[in-house]
Image (tube, rainbow, N blue to C red; front, side):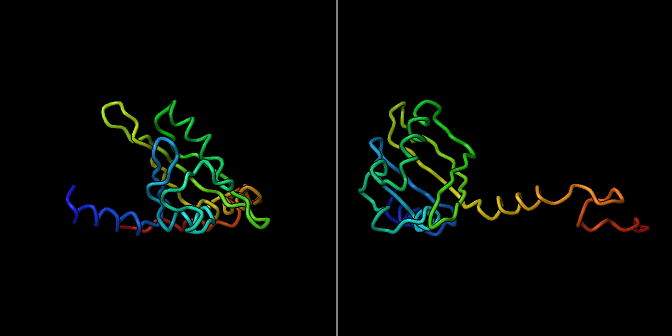
Length: 148
């Protein structure tokens, strides 16, 4: 990959709304974009290139996830809960090993904040399923068909 392509890839990763973390096989952080820090509620000092993610107390779940990843090679749509200041945040996490000819070079983790989605799902669970007339509670009902 030439230098200009590497710069474009770097800018894309840094611009993503999804969190991206790339680690080497021993857990050393190679890439952590700003969204990763935002979603994980950690500073740039904590989630910095060259630090070992397995040694970051707040992110200890990565050790377990990486161990599982070594067995399965891919983790899709895992939900992770993070507690901070009496609030719980839910992240959707996907992970994949980075391999070249059966040699493990590291892993990449992508995650998004699912907190608002989870909150809305909880509200829907608390709402009555059907209104007295059999209609769905609180949802607009379709009108009569429109003639062509």
